Amino acid sequence: MSDTILHDLYQVVLGRKSDPQEGSYTCYLFDKGLDKILKKVGEECSETIIAAKNGKQEETVGEISDLIYHLMVMMAHQNIPLDAVMAELERRSHKIGNLKQMKTVDHET
Ligand SMILES: N=c1c2ncn([C@@H]3O[C@H](COP(=O)(O)OP(=O)(O)OP(=O)(O)O)[C@@H](O)[C@H]3O)c2ncn1[C@@H]1O[C@H](COP(=O)(O)O)[C@@H](O)[C@H]1O
Image (cartoon, rainbow, N blue to C red; front, side, top):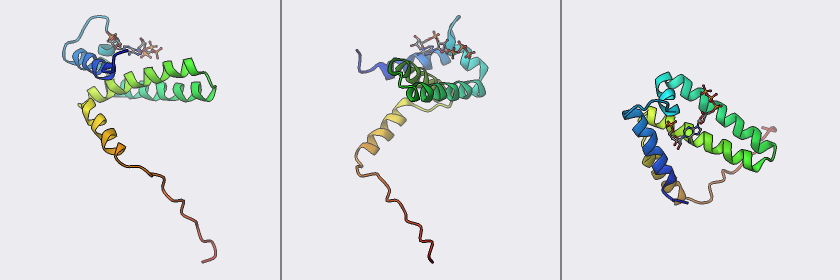
């Protein structure tokens, strides 16, 4: 399996945006516009949650893949480079111990 698959997929999505192709689902989404793309992101997110809740691993992997693809279409629509997300993840990877302390509510004051 190629370790550049996310970058490769994003390049395909960007290519569909700049050079529309007949019969392309990605082009169909760009044609429909942001509201349709966001609806699909929401649907795929919900389907991922349901598959995970049901403990269906293979189905969950499929739904996660649908979600990542639709997120990429959203990113391309909004002109967000994949490298911006990669850089943010990289920045966060340098920080550990991210659990916030639970604040105790003092009801007696
Ligand atoms: N990764 C994906 C990908 N994941 C999911 N899908 C499509 O997303 C759609 C989601 O299915 P749904 O049943 O939820 O939606 P639908 O009822 O078909 O359509 P709508 O609800 O959107 O109207 C299906 O048509 C899937 O084929 C994808 N379509 C494309 N890609 C990638 O994009 C590349 C380019 O595809 P085209 O743009 O079609 O050439 C492909 O080679 C893939 O790498």
